[in-house]
Length: 394
Ligand SMILES: Cc1cc2nc3c(=O)[nH]c(=O)nc-3n(C[C@H](O)[C@H](O)[C@H](O)COP(=O)(O)OP(=O)(O)OC[C@H]3O[C@@H](n4cnc5c(N)ncnc54)[C@H](O)[C@@H]3O)c2cc1C
Image (cartoon, rainbow, N blue to C red; front, top):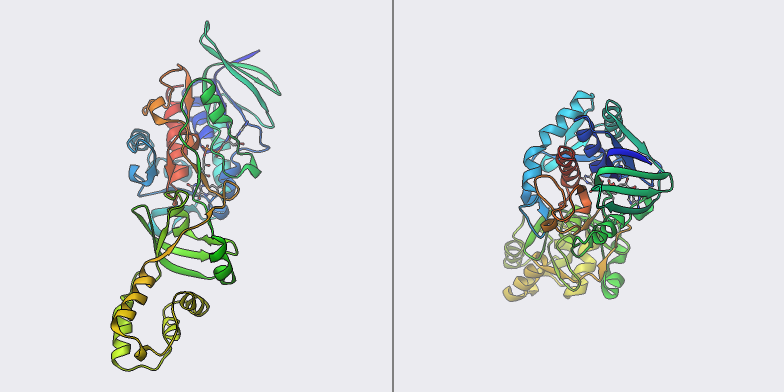
């Protein structure tokens, strides 16, 4: 049986950062992963350019049963720290909207950085490795991990197996199973940052709008996001929709302001007062995509020349435009969700070290914990930060 100081299950962003951070402290580290390559999610993230952090990162960008849990790790591994690491390796990056930092060339470069960093340390990696059993030898206080590649023993065990999203590239629920085996609570799990699917009625009406995008403000359960809303053949997607999906539960309505910059009532009223003969859906086409304006208006109202409406009717139309309510049937599920909301209950872990309070030497990092970032580089930043701090204590 091979013995190491640290075994890390999961060679994704947080597992690799933890390996580097602990390896630099002189710990002997073994990383085990069932996938063919390290960092598969890093590779596909940000459309292949990896939105690797956000310069505005703070705890308010995260959902968790305990919104304060992430504070400590975020303060000890900041966006500046990941930027410094990437700059050291010559990775070029660019700032896009809202403080989001992306690789200027390819996310592949970040994976190369991680590989170059761990090669300087006593870190070994076994890929294509199936985990068969994990247990703790209470007498020795060590962990025994039985795998398709042999049995390994370590003083510390780090579970960095991510969430359930994108099972097609290796995501699995093993992290939650291991937590439960050791008696740790797991909060409710849900797909997040995920497109919505229309109800059958909405699908019938709106599916022909597939491909149309609108700059909107979208609200759900008191959270409001501004950005693009995209019609798909199944429902709604786009950055603003993905953001609200993390706050959505079955049966909730989402409220869409189709013209957040404009007071459409004021415009309609002026046209009515000037006795405009323009049909109202044609007038709306000046502000919204033509096909959308036509279908949306026909669904809600009868279109006629603006001068034929009274003030109350115009008020009602304006209200619908600024508060269009939709109740999605569901989300698209983990196959297309960027992340999993929920995870290992933060009450079970030390926010300073990511170690289990019940099981000494057992650590969790990254998405497997009940800390879920909004869209914009926050999830990868949490993976780096939690992996880094755990690496300081394993
Ligand atoms: C399409 C997509 C785009 C994204 N884009 C961004 C972005 O631009 N910015 C951002 O901040 N976040 C993005 N995310 C989210 C981000 O990639 C994740 O939150 C982050 O990678 C989580 O890191 P992690 O280390 O916790 O888990 P992961 O990176 O998921 O790593 C988990 C590792 O565990 C391994 N594993 C799982 N189960 C087992 C098992 N049974 N046995 C052995 N090994 C196992 C996996 O193979 C994997 O290597 C995106 C996600 C997706 C799906």
